[in-house]
Image (cartoon, rainbow, N blue to C red; front, side, top):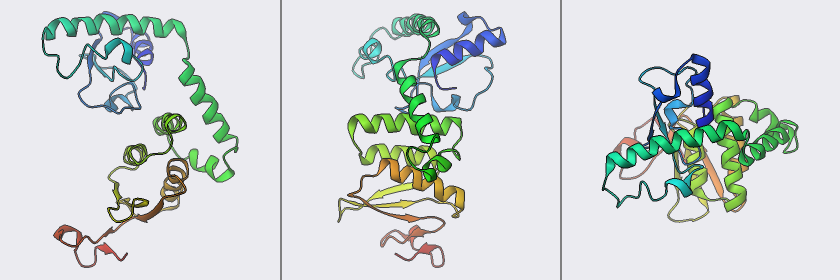
Length: 231
């Protein structure tokens, strides 16, 4: 599940009273997803029905001052207000239907599947699961608005390719080194190439290292004989 309204619909399906749902602002979350990452693969809700939300994903104007880092007064009052506001926003969500953002993502996903971005991209896109596609589409919309940037690329890579590490060269601002951390396979290679083509500008040069990390002089763990890649 990715959105507040999905939580409410699931609660209704399971016969859970909405008043039992306890919402809290997540301590850690992806800036591209509304629910905290632990809810991405949740199919059914379970007690005690505590749902962590990124309140800034869609509701920044509402919550930008409520959880300001310098604000420490009245924590219980702010917690109660958060509950009331999220429940109200959730009700509005259910009545409004698909948001404009969701409409854009639906159209973008359809265009990719239809091969408008190329046959290879359509096939690679099909290798990602539902939650991974959600991250990709949200990232692509963000990139179209802000332009390509290494922070967005790094986030997408780390979100979709677990344990990968993205390095930015100090000597060359347009050189990127990516350690995948897994044995190369056809499916993994297609996924990585999809991400690179969509999120890395043409001015950048990317070197990929799959199973073996490249050696870094001065870091002993990266210089194990027989376990490093030769650059």
